[in-house]
Image (cartoon, rainbow, N blue to C red; front, side):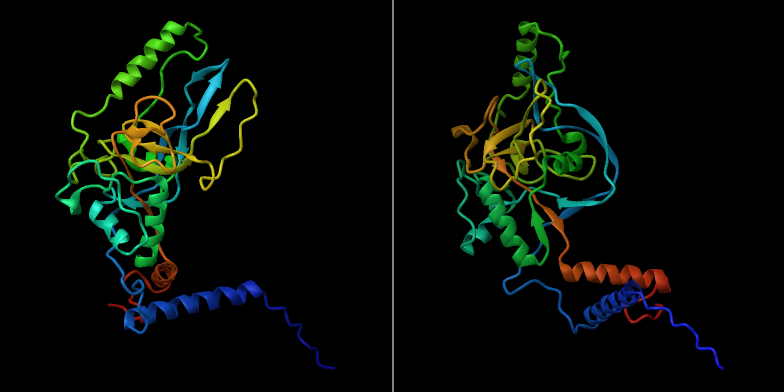
Length: 317
């Protein structure tokens, strides 16, 4: 009697992977041939210039405020290893770009305190955290990519050598109030307001080792990191708050400044302690949209299958 060969069950994963690859390749071919357009919706705007921060390790001091015995102590500074690239706006959002969102009735006009004749190259200031979130949503719709505010950690990673270290630099066990007062006085003296607080054209405040322009000039940048306090005596750290409802966010520049999310003029209040920022602005992080991600995946897959010199039709050249 003939033997009947056993038929192995087909794994769903073994089918899904080729199908997913086939779909990605189809999208890439359609994009290359012009059958599929990856541009944003009607009224699309040009995406801001960005820099890509390559993965690397760096030392990061937590933005959280730590207390022991009722006294502020320096947050820990830890070595962190970042394994994925970060794409972030090279410059702060300009007033000209922000006003396009205003003209589209999606953003509120910035609260300008100074005459800024060259709007296109002047950073948008007089904007709150809420304003920045609305602009990010508008820009995402107009470009087809995802734009959002960076966290404090991400901004520190991107700004590299330009990011401030707010440590007092004293022994946490030192209970002498005079030493603490002197250290705090010296820190606040370093945070003195700029001689000219008016927003300046792009490139006025230098560039970081990573290519970020104008960070730590006279414009502080909103982050999506909530202001957080930890009492080390309780040994009960609070849960990470949600930036959508925490109310107080970190703005980073020459120093970190906790600010109420609705504040636009930092001189008018909202800073919980210390010298207020000269101005409040922002820059955004970019993540590719769906079609862009699929296209990139397809191109990388084809490069692995056929070599880096292969085009979307699978032919060399």
